[in-house]
Image 1: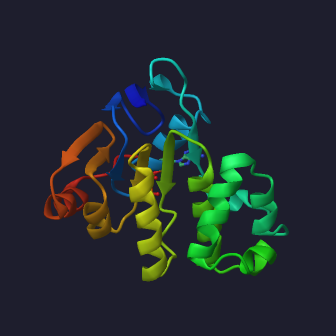
Image 2 (image 1 turned 180 degrees about the vertical axis):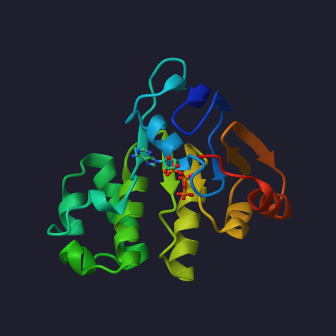
Length: 210
Ligand SMILES: Nc1ncnc2c1ncn2[C@@H]1O[C@H](COP(=O)(O)OP(=O)(O)OP(=O)(O)O)[C@@H](O)[C@H]1O
């Protein structure tokens, strides 16, 4: 499965190109407001843009899994309500992941009673349970404690053997530690990032033009 972004232009990005031609855990870093979430929304085909985004193995169009915001979950419903509409393998994946996050009990309570971390656990489990070729994790783990984050990264590592995973986070040490390859996104495109020091430098010195 390949993800090819050709000359993507949006209100915030200009002629951005990137080709990811193998499954892996890719880190996408960048200043606030650069357009990372905009990029993911375009990849998820939920906005108009100029340019081209192809997700395909040459035969089939690839599927994307992306929870853009925790607000998509109706706070009067329970996490279990979202899990029970999953079918087949997707439901099985969720059943496998829930105990790892001690989620089975609180998933029976209304979402309005959840902490930030509990909502993120729901969003994370939902995102990684879907049968997708590209999985996007957009600052979904910021509220998780260290033990939960380690479990989440373990799952992403395993899935990255067969899927393209795009992860963004402002915790640069973690991005560098877990991601196989890291890209720095600015208005004009992607730069390869070699290490944590370079990531810090790019974040410090690059301006955001709005
Ligand atoms: N729905 C929207 N309509 C118009 N402009 C938007 C919308 N959402 C975001 N923007 C603007 O688009 C730009 C990019 O926002 P985006 O959320 O993609 O950045 P980001 O890189 O994900 O930032 P952060 O690291 O803060 O999450 C910002 O200038 C923002 O103000």
